Length: 213
Image 1 (tube, helix red, strand yellow):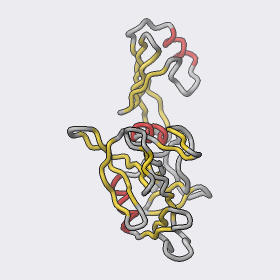
Image 2 (cartoon, one colour):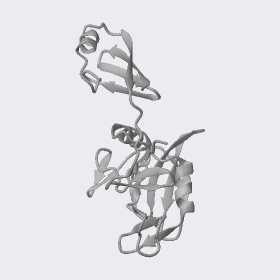
Image 3 (cartoon, one colour):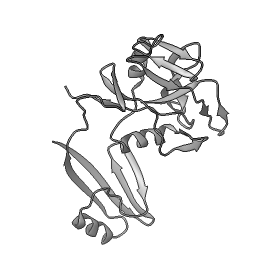
Image 4 (spheres, helix red, strand yellow):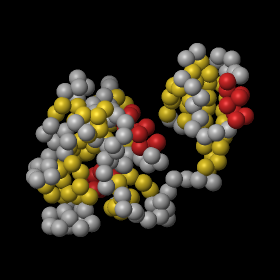
């Protein structure tokens, strides 16, 4: 079992919850689990009161792939993009970097790191003009056995303009400099590589899970 520390502060418009590096504001009880005593403690608190809660949870690791995932590069990769949350456009979902990190966490998964995206690219890939996207690893250039497909659905820039020429997927690693940026996978019909992008852009999201050793 591992310990998970959640800090909760009551403010005028609800609760501020700090969970690791994530901080969120809730307009009602922020806990996703039912603990009556803690609920009562929070609602009886005065504004500015804060509490730290320590719970023990099992680490989110997985031992085998299922029908919704495939094992590549020592990880379980989802076979489909996240289709809940973010901004929906024509049936597809696009996320800022912060939204992507939170959406993956809610599913008990995470975003690939920049190095994990690079490792996937190094295994080789082939563009599929009919499906408009790239097959990675496995028999990517023949029958696609053991491969994973990533559709190229474009992205929305920070002005909310759709750019349709390539596929873009967020990585978990962020870069703080003059402005906040994160790594992401970019691919087209010609190539696939990892670059740096402003976190306000809206990209597609593909999740991974760690495999228990």
